[in-house]
Image (cartoon, rainbow, N blue to C red):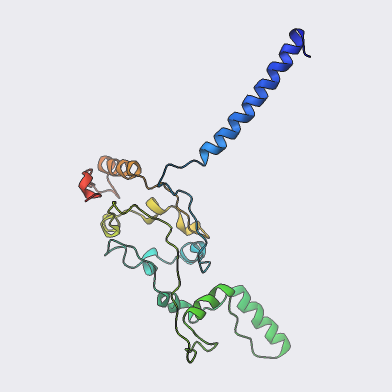
Length: 222
């Protein structure tokens, strides 16, 4: 049993270490705590591993090439698979894989094989296409069941076209999507977050222009 001043100091040190450990553990758990309806950090695995980092980042494909209804509709929309086929009817694998096969075929004195990445094969299977990109007889096309990442409650009205035409960048709400291999929800999309954004742009403007972003409840709830 600990006695005297030395024992008391040791006991105090042990208690302080335990308190510090519990505080660190609590802070970690609080950092992961979300209020109901807050899906910040949600990043579901999609049926096809589509890389926004590659398409929007490296290849600089404009967001609205795929999400073409964002400037004219309430919904940005999930691109139809036919939009993917505009490019991937011809681009079937990474450039590195295609070049490696070309070099190997040249060394072996044969024609290069058609290279298809496993993820793009899922796209071709959805279209029921054969190796020559022709419909397979007797097989039907099937939809690609993409999983929506950013979900707002049913009682909230949000119009993409209003924001896009006003000059709000996609990244303002969706984060730096052009850096993401798998898209995740970056902001909490809470009412407070939206209202604060409206207040900020009303005060400082947007893209060098003054704006009048509504703070009326009925603008988003009606």
